Length: 159
Image (cartoon, rainbow, N blue to C red; front, side, top):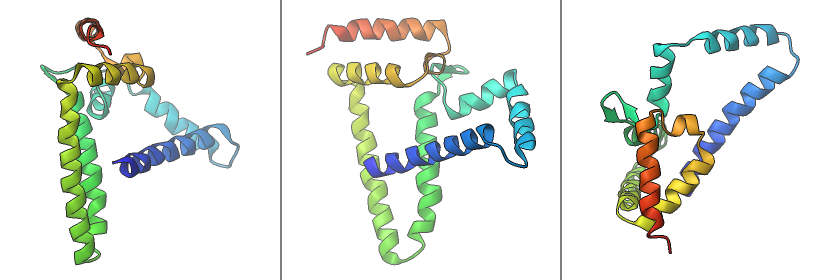
């Protein structure tokens, strides 16, 4: 899992660096880039919120909770979409890709143990709050209250 997450993180960093350089440096088409960046920022209202919610949302998504499904979808799309190009190279590559998918599934199942281990859950929530912007972590006041209540309960189990 580490090498996959590191590669995904590198892709995100790469995109961020591209945007930073195109935003900050001087070049012939800088004005054009700035215009598109401005147009993207101007998209607001329900369309913007709902699109962003499809990429990462904390709390409710309609009447259900979306973050777990969103993370699963993103992971699945990337692994299957990009993995196809690896697997089609040879029978050996296909075999290794299938093994990888099965191992990843088992690891994801183990992640589910967070829900039953107070110690792991508390540590996870603590780290999540340190890394994810609060406005993305939870959108609704109700979910913030539930989160705080869960943390309070989990404090009893700290070792």
